[in-house]
Image (cartoon, rainbow, N blue to C red; front, side):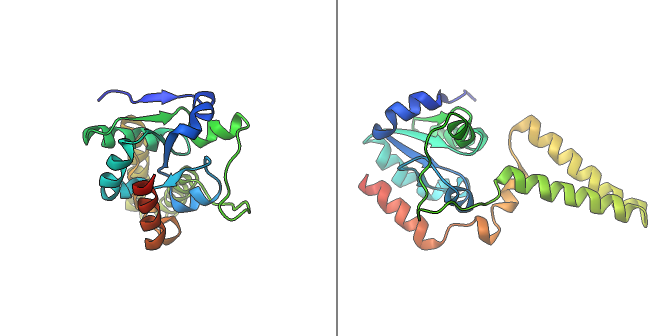
Length: 190
């Protein structure tokens, strides 16, 4: 698997007017602020959006973004497997913010939502602590903590995260049906 083409934040900023930006973070993360003009298509809805992304790619270059660059890199690989050429933003929206570039806030307010990485850290930590605490009653419960540790190690090696995939299915991380449909319509009209 090849590494997708990357743009640094300055390259993306200067080309933003000509790029079609796909933000693959969850709707909650997207609502906290996103690159101006970005379309929110959560990573787990990418397959459904393929026809509209393919259509948009015929009219311009696509830049895929997420919080750190890991999910957008996975999205780029998925899109490349379907013949769609894309680039990813090096360092994601975290790098965009660190470099002082502006975010768009849909309703004019700044919402706070937990990033997927933070949600994973909370869930993993809570499960490990629970496994250790219950392990005092029954030693077999320590296997729960060991399982989470193994999952985190596998996540680091493969640059994927099963826990993030599960957490993305929680209601606050899911797009409302109308929102996704409006995003896909905007891509078709782009």
